[in-house]
Length: 147
Length: 139
Image 1 (cartoon, chains in turn cyan, blue):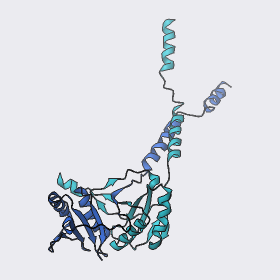
Image 2 (cartoon, helix red, strand yellow):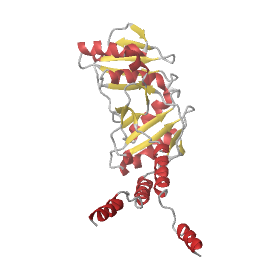
Image 3 (tube, chains in turn red, purple):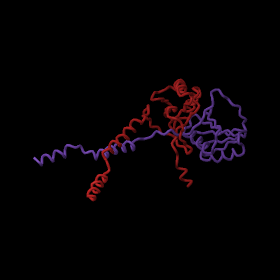
């Protein structure tokens, strides 16, 4: 009697309840799907310059504005081609909208002639967007040499 | 009759044991295929517009970036120009700043020089811990 009772009990516990596992997995899946934010702009594939001193920018994403500068000197902000002398007029409202915390991430082609970069930084100065990050990829060649 | 009943009972339940596998497979697929757009780079704070600072020449280290990547180093008032490779600038800056803590690095880039040459110099300066950097274009 006692043995039979024990056997039945252990049989019930030996199986892990896997019926709720699917719910858990779908919950996780839906959580990640909902919490994912998609970038507003479509990514441009530019060859960025490399730098060993590359650091992560510690700033909320909503305060960051990407300014793309292509090799021919064309500037794109939020997928729109902006003439060089209009850049400050486009950036200035963004600067106000972010409560003057705007950080401009200048994503320029590594082979763009410098006078275009100078023109963009002058425009940014005009818009008072003074916090600028030159987007670079981390260069690791020399650190390996040092070891 | 008995055989038919047994068959019905088996097919009446949807097999939920593989549902978790499917869900996790989807989860892992999306986790792996997600690429994060990292915000990274060399940060700098530009001066305010129309802000001109009078700086004594002896506190300035001129770094003139040429189109071929060679950097011409000119120390303050001395007229001599020393052409160096960008990789040597970190050492030069450390030596110079040890003698003069008020030193300012003036990076002057020729208009036709590629952007990456300027970044190479800025990289070296930031690696050497330089904080007073001025970016200009060669007029």
